[in-house]
Image 1 (cartoon, one colour):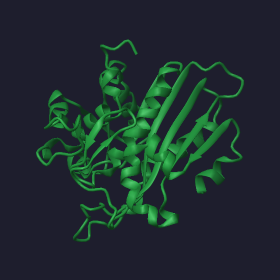
Image 2 (cartoon, one colour; image 1 turned 45 degrees about the vertical axis):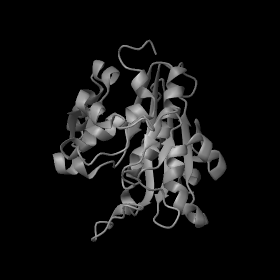
Image 3 (cartoon, one colour; image 1 turned 90 degrees about the vertical axis):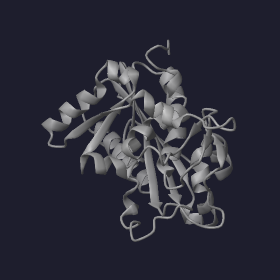
Length: 280
């Protein structure tokens, strides 16, 4: 409601809210699995917000595409956050909030010939009798069969479908650059402390996107650490049996958890088919 109210009078922007559970089940099946247990409480229902900004009267020469994690509250689901570690999980929506704020800021600045499109996945990861559980296999928007291994790794489930929709948007966009923004893993904090982490896939690394973000972060006093996805991260996410295409979480990757999450996202969203060796 706050995002809708904020953007309804913002010039050159368009906001669309998708909130019908039956439609979301088709368009965002992984997100819907996370949200399933929340459907018994109307005010906890999920939605996906699509924000679009088009610079006025200018030829578009670049497109920024975003997917944002907006977990409004994270109990951990069936793999519940026990022992007092649930406190603060109202902030698990900060990735989506940052993107909304970025687009609002962009709309107030002089034109940069850049179009911006974002999908924000807003969902509550609740615990109850209809919570999604480990060992479920859910087919993503990209048609990838995902095996759930930990319901507290819900952020990557939410992001993968939004990322897949932005993948399709990128194919018809001018000079697209795509980014995901999320409070995704505690491992990131254990790795670099309270700093943000940027990870590139192959095409992003070819234009030094993470390095560019880090340089800007240094100038503005908001440092970003650069991490890298390795081939073993994809191997760790690879299927362990014939009933799925990718695993969502692995207890065996504790030393590379945030890199694993990035590799999972690329596979589950279909982005692994668009590497530097792809024509698209």
